[in-house]
Length: 102
Image 1 (cartoon, helix red, strand yellow):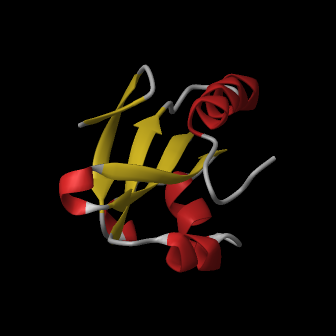
Image 2: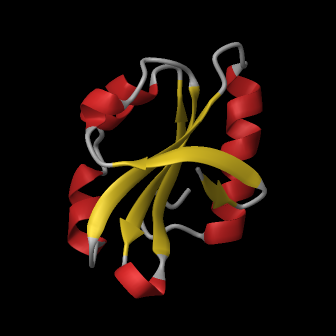
C-alpha cells in the first residue's frame, strides 16, 4: 500500500501482468530511492491493465524517470467514469504530474 494524496493505493507494482483488468485510478510513480516516489502521471480507466499496457504517454514516463517506474492502483470496480474523473482531477491538481498535463 502507498498513500497518494488522501487515498490508499495498492502497489507500487512493477510488472503490468500483475495489474487487474478493472476500473480505477492509477498513479505512475518514479521510485527515486531515498528521495521517495515522484508522481509522473495520474489517470483513470475502465481497465487499468489495458490502459497502462497501451498508453500513449509511456515515452514521457521513460524520459522523465530517474529510477524505476512503478504503478500504484486504486481499484474502483463498480465506479462511474464521473467518480474516477473527479478523483483523477483532484490528484492532478495536488501533484501537477510531469506527464499528461491537462
